[in-house]
Image (tube, rainbow, N blue to C red):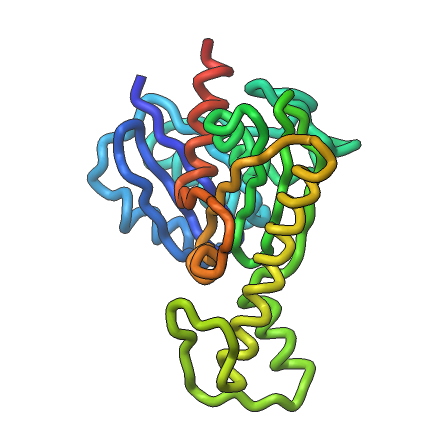
Length: 246
């Protein structure tokens, strides 16, 4: 069966078909219907569409409406439950967990069944820990590096000159590089502290998987082994769809 997997985030739409690379689009909620017509025009409709959305109601309705009006399809919408694909959810109320985080955990745990730390770097940075028995231990949410930088500049009188951080740069040597390195290293420090804590307490020696549009600057500063998988959420939607279709 030809399936299309769709990850509708807060600012980006990502999609892929089986055995095809991920594609992505920066979207505007009110304009999404027209943007979809531009990128999917002329494509043969799949037999099935599976959607995971953390977007607002307007964007989600535009996506579902386009699929119904243009392809005549009612998609399967992924939801978080207490247990799926070998994982048990650590949230007291599973439906409060973002479905993108759940999909990312499903995909990461399939690759690291002895335990994994999953980090999604976007507008928000999220971290979720899974042990070797498939138990979601919980996680953390903090502003992404870009969001931290924007708040800092908005709430202070700091003026930033043009500048970039060089690969491998350890210390900031301009206001711009100090801010970028400081915010990115705050996220890196959390990742490394969580891994060290999981090891020290005997939970597991977790693998680390990074994903999300803001993963690049974080990855460049990591001092521990990791995998970067930009299509991680879509991989999880695919595994979820396969389990639910059995």
